[in-house]
Length: 137
Image (cartoon, rainbow, N blue to C red; front, side, top):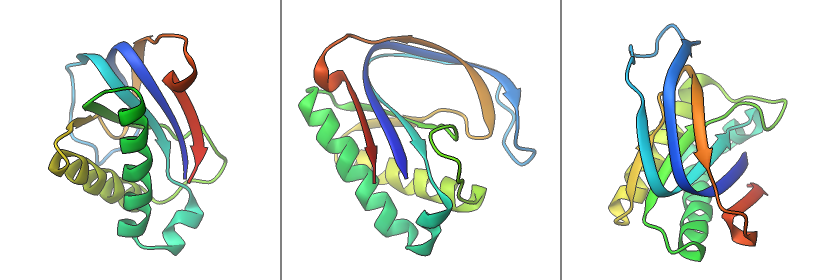
């Protein structure tokens, strides 16, 4: 699993193109402020372990980054461009859903960008050391 976590002053998206037939129809975008934005790629090798074990690893990393940025809002974004290998759609979506639930149970305000879409993105992010953290988990 590859993860690029960014603290963002502002983040917005609009659905541009549906790329997964089974994805629900989304037409509206959304905007957020003062949030942790996690670009996440689940890899094929992640499927050798359980969803729960990978989800715990991801959530612990995101919670650490959120604490370092004094932030309680999290945006999970599936971004299949951080590595060559991709996990199955089903494994990835289940992991995202479990991570969102675990973060909400830890009192984070958490959302996911629309799964199965290419999105037009607007990002305003500050330029300090812990505002951008890349990891292989």
